[in-house]
Length: 258
Image (cartoon, rainbow, N blue to C red; front, side, top):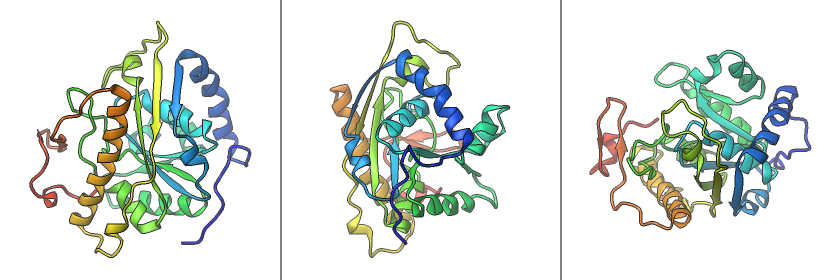
C-alpha cells in the first residue's frame, strides 16, 4: 500500500469536522479533567494508523476523539450505521467523513474498503475491537471481533492499543445520563503497536484473526490494568449477539468474523 504522510489537525478536514471540533473541544477541555499518556506513539507514526480502544460507555468516543486530536491525529471512527441516522448528529458525523459499519448486510464490506482507503490517505482510523460496549460486569475488555486486526494485516499499518477509563463515571454503560459533577478524570493510555509479525505469512482466516485479536486485547487489557491498578480476570468474556456470554472460547472458529 502506498505511503502517504499522516493527516494533521492543520490540514483541510472539512467544514463539518471543524464545526464538530469547535463545538466539542471546549466542552471536553473543561467539563472533565485529563491524564493522557503515550500520545507520542500516535504522533511519531509517519502515515496511517489504526487506533483500537476499549469501549465502556456511550461517552467514551468523545474521550478517544479528544486524545487523538491532542496527539495531532484527527480521528476517523468506524461507527454503527444507526448512528448516522440520528437527526442532526448523524448528518454532522457523515459530513465529517466518519465511516459507517453495516453489519450483516451486503454493504458490510464497504466499511473495510473505506477504512483501507482512509489509512492509505494517512488517516488515523479508530476501531472498537469489541464491536460494542463491554458486557463484562467489571468493565474489563471482552474478546475482539475481527475488524481491527483484519485492517492491520491487510494494510500493513500499525495497530495501536488504547485503554481509557473514566467515561463510565459520566455515563454508565447503556444508561442515558450525564453526570459531570464533581468533575471526572479521563485517563487514557496509548500503547506500542501490537506485534503481528507472527501472523504475516498466515492465511487471513478465522484462526489467524482470532489469534491477532488475542494479541490486541492482551495489550489493551494490560494498559487498562495499569490505569486501574487492578488484576484483570483470567478469562476474557465472549459476547455473542444471540444474548449469550461466556468465558474464553475453546475454538475461535465459534466466533464469526466481523
